[in-house]
Length: 504
Image 1 (cartoon, helix red, strand yellow):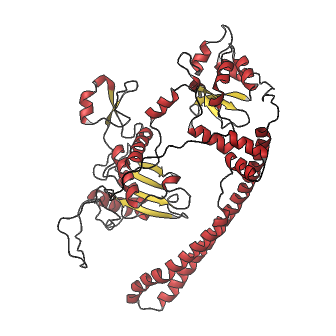
Image 2: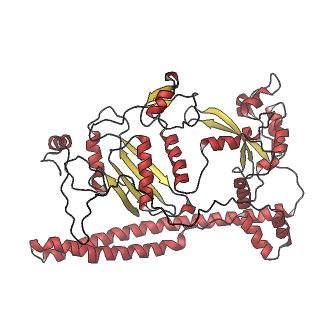
Image 3: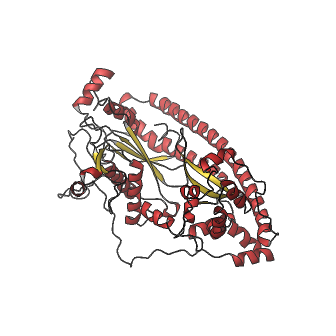
């Protein structure tokens, strides 16, 4: 609750199976007490929208959450959806109770493909009844509902991106197909964009030179050859406690973020992954895992190059980037101090409004106080808090982060100012060719169907009050339905542990 709503700009998008966000923790805890064997009784999922997709609508967010809930097998479980509005990117947090209020158990086990038994068109999701019949018994196994949860959630995100026409990321299959391609061609658009942003030359444009350095027959000679080019070997480890050597990357010494997997250098007839490189060393010399702790660092860590226009401009750009980072750090400290002061002012304002309401209510008759509380909240409290929040946002606006100037913007500005060197470098820069998404033919837009939202066939006439009858179900589906009747087993729990007649 502290993370979701306390001292956060937030919006409650949806609740289900609980009476309110404020009571969700206690009610989910009561449901969780029905199961003493489950280890994970709460599941948290954070979903972010891409910056270029803007702010998603309420219906789209709820549709995305419903699809994730279905993939995880948590239909019918209590959950809350809260959107945070104090960051630049649009994102929501979903908290599910993994214990069902009807059965007191976690979702049943599901069939999954075993490792090494991949089948085409069957992804990380659990097997449907038809797929279970087609997959041999030796190739499938029963697993818990949260087995490979991250991969399954990401798989749903890739499908929803295509379905809702959002920014698309590569699926694991598409990413693997790209990794298998040889790099004897020009840089990918993403790598060229990074080059335009930082000024570093993509390493795949130097792939042939890196391959020649890695063809040396000892690890020390390979390291020295790469150091002469301004590059270094960087091992990749898996695990946190017992670290295991997983792979190898090649990185720029001056710009460690400009790196390349050794296996991405593979060609049709030769492999450059860690395992393959270990096989092609002189017999008797240490392999990479034995050589790395005892390695000798070469002092010729950057190549000897004659000064050119690009290198001189790169030094000026690095200085401007360092100054920008320093200014951003100062802004960050100022913004943190400002948020502390604003939080204190907000708390003081709320306390003052409570005192004011108490004083004014004491002058009224008890029968008139309920109406006064509602009127005071709408006409005084909400208005003054909204004005205070608007002023706080205006105070924070000048301290928000600004984008770091990219290399392409830097040399473009220099060229526009009349710098001949910048003009030469800009002319040699290859523009990034962006692929435009096909635009659908003009026509009426289709409304996105919202799941689990059924309308009655007998619609009441307009401008007439709608009558509702209380339901006896434990947690009826729908939005923000509070004051629901508590199930018998939960009422017994409250009578036994909390003392009282139960909650309604």
